[in-house]
Length: 240
Image (cartoon, rainbow, N blue to C red; front, side, top):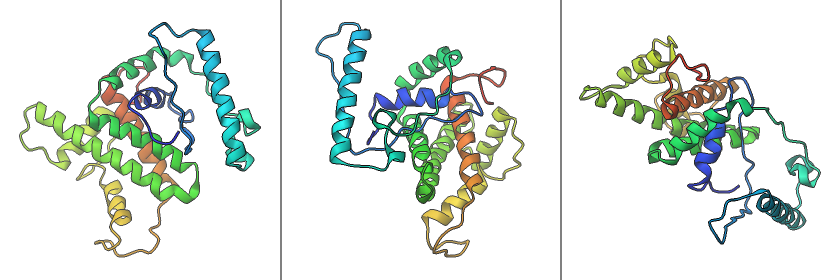
């Protein structure tokens, strides 16, 4: 895929957010050759239509492979590349459908965040784009901050602070962070990366650890699952 469409964000987002904790996350592979399939009527999509789409897509992929040759590690299985690492998840279908329905009507802030979570995983698969992966996560983090502040306003707090947002997160997650501000360590890293001349000192190459991405990614996926699904801590499928 190249650019996530309004249809793809809820679809892929439901798979990402409703995945079981500890299993690999979905990460679509980036490409500059997008394909848009449309139907000519409103008839129900059946097995015949799916097979037609599959045949069309495989032909398209094979044609693009001839025009844009790639190393085997970057090829899909249909062209002899590495097999996909599939995770059996039929038990999560009802959960996933719930998230899909909620995402179809979600506000732009949530959709932007989910889109960035997907892009973060795509970038993180390639070490040279690790910094970009973190930037995508920080955009999602800003969205999380805005959503929490709005929820606090809805409860009657006129001017909620970043500390109020941190306390709210601790309450819903059970995570005793003792933050003075919302995800304060991650915001410090964000400042170091995005502002070359900052209060922490200029760095030609900011040093970030793998855990800086992995920990925030897991928390953001869980946070948006909670926010989209509306499940409480007691839900067996929720990560909070």
